[in-house]
Amino acid sequence: MKRHGHPVDYDRFRGYLDARILIESLRASGPSVTGASLAATLEGLHKVDLGGYTYQYSAQNRNGSSYVDIAVIGPDGNYMH
Image (tube, rainbow, N blue to C red; front, top):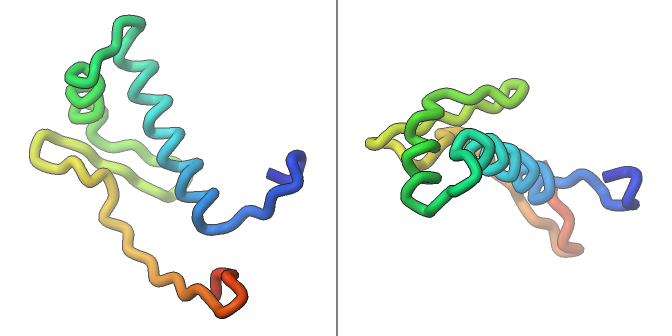
C-alpha cells in the first residue's frame, strides 16, 4: 500500500484478507474452476489462518469468519477506533 501511496485502512485490510482467501480457493480448485467447484473447494479448506485472522468454511458455515469489529466513521469520513 505504501508503494502505491494508499493508506492501510480497515476496508483495504479486510479486502486484502478476502482476496487471500479467494486466491487460495482458486489455486486449490485447479485450472477449470466453476462456481460450484469453487464453493466445494471453500468448504474443503476448513480452517485457514492468515496471521491471526482465522477463516473457517464448511457445508454448514459459509460465513468464513465470526470476527466482529466496531468501526465508527467520523464526520470527515475517517475511521475512528
